[in-house]
Length: 87
Image 1 (spheres, one colour):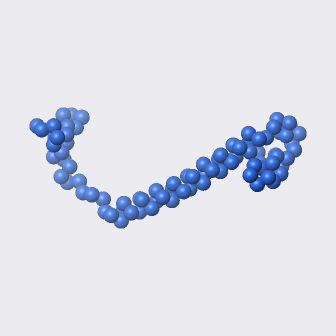
Image 2 (cartoon, one colour):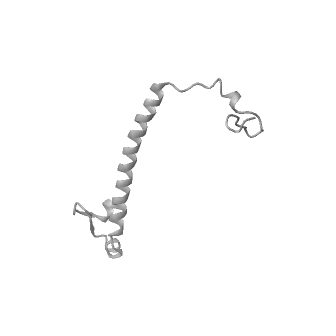
Image 3 (cartoon, one colour):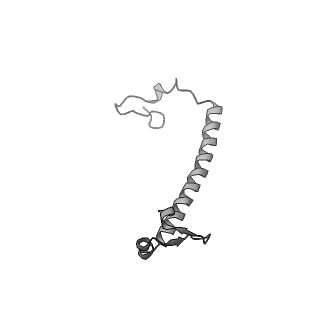
């Protein structure tokens, strides 16, 4: 057995002889997976941005605001909202 060509599976048998019947996936499937990955990446980045904005808002809210049920200011847009509306 040559080290470059023969790959052994977990039982010590030659793994390369079993790969002859495996075919490459169709190109349309790979294209659809690539497009879905792009969309998922965009959605994930929007989701992470939203979570970061919420964390920033929570970090800027004081205990006094929570106890008195007053308003809190949203960062970046500078809008006052009710604590009940956000939390």
